[in-house]
Length: 92
Image (tube, rainbow, N blue to C red):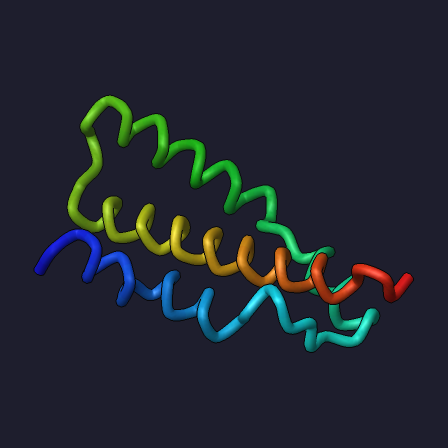
């Protein structure tokens, strides 16, 4: 499969198409609640550990999967926060 085809069907590409930034759909309260979502300190510490270990090519298979999970959750949260910001445009 080509890179373009796999990019268009990746989890994040599909989610971006579902959560169209041109169509606000969140109430101001819901948007503000989404914008307040953050990783816990323990998760941020763990992501930092995994990132450092990844830079030195020292991740085990289980750690690679864990790091990938954190990355996907972070990307999903980023998309939702972008949608929340778009929903608040002109609503405040």
